[in-house]
Length: 152
Image (cartoon, rainbow, N blue to C red; front, side):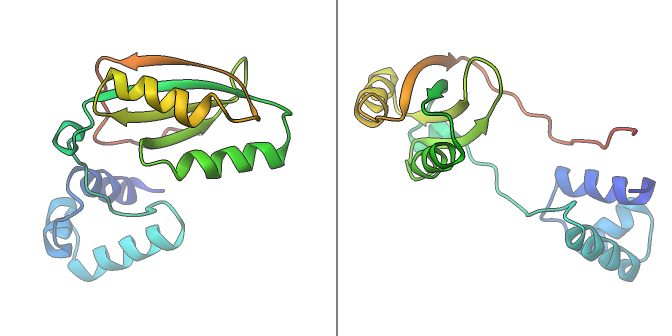
């Protein structure tokens, strides 16, 4: 990615709803050039989609937690099966497959702490592949609005 691609990506991360004309004006290029650059970034997989950010409390999901999960036996089939199962649960926001003492980090958002406990008891404790889990309640969650490329 060159400096122009980086500027386009940064501007889109700030406001993905801006028109191509506004984006072109922001980065200082012609609209036709801008449109081609954005298409190329999508084709190369740099831009993977456009998303709306939502307020979790407005969706009755003010309590977030990271669930640290170990599965057994540790195999591709078990890992893929657990990922598929967890992603089907409405409480789950995202899943990370990790190395170390845990096999997964599962980010969830629920209405309250009692709901988190019920989720763990009803949806995790009875699963044969889950060898263990623990939860960490998230007090605050901040996300960088713009992610910049790093030098190689």
